[in-house]
Length: 180
Ligand SMILES: CC(C)(COP(=O)(O)OP(=O)(O)OC[C@H]1O[C@@H](n2cnc3c(N)ncnc32)[C@H](O)[C@@H]1OP(=O)(O)O)[C@@H](O)C(=O)NCCC(=O)NCCS
Image 1 (cartoon, helix red, strand yellow):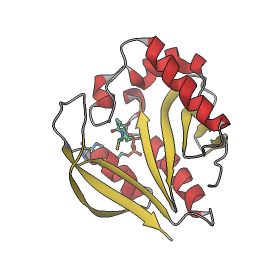
Image 2 (tube, rainbow, N blue to C red):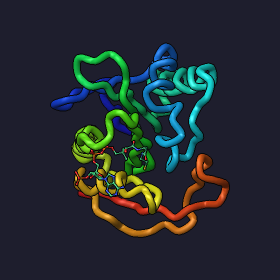
Image 3 (cartoon, rainbow, N blue to C red):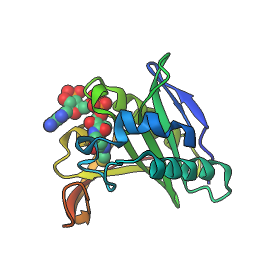
C-alpha cells in the first residue's frame, strides 16, 4: 500500500499525524462535543484518558507496517490548537476517507479544502483507483463537502451504520466516490 505523507499543507490548513499529548486539545476542539459526533460512529468523549489512549494507537499505526489506516490532525495555519481530523483507510485498490471538524470552524470551507487534498493524493497513487466516503443520510453538510471535493453520489446504503450518539438503530447512509 502507498504511504501517505506524515504532514501536508493546503492554502489555509496544516495537517500532521497525532500524538497522545494532543488529547486535551482534541477533546476541547471537537471530540467532546455531542453535536459534532451526532452522525459519527463514536460517541463524544467525556474523559481525556481514553482519548489519549486512542490517539496513542493512531500515532502507532503511523509507525507500524500494517499500513491500512492513517489519520491526521488538522490545524489552521499559524494556530497551534487542532480544529479537526481527517483519515484514510486503505481497502485494496480503494481508500475510504473520514473526517470531523470542531463546531467553531464549520461553514468556512475547511473540510472541503482538506478532503480535496486527500482525494487528490489518493488519485495520484498508481495502486489506488477509488477514493470514497459515506455519511449519514441526514448529514447534508457532509454530503455537500464530498460533492464539493469532487466525489459523485453512488447510492444509499440502507441500515448501514450506527450513530451511538443518536441511538442503537442502524441508519441509512449516502455513499460517494471519485474513481480514475
Ligand atoms: C460535515 C463537516 C465536516 C463539514 O465541514 P465544513 O468545513 O463546515 O464544510 P464546508 O464549509 O467545506 O462545506 C459545508 C457545506 O455544507 C453546506 N451545509 C451546511 N449545513 C447544511 C445543512 N444542514 N443542509 C445542507 N447543506 C448544509 C454548507 O452550506 C456548505 O456548502 P456550500 O459551500 O455549497 O454552501 C462538519 O460540519 C463536521 O465535522 N460535522 C461533524 C462531524 C461529521 O459529521 N463528519 C462527517 C462524517 S461523514
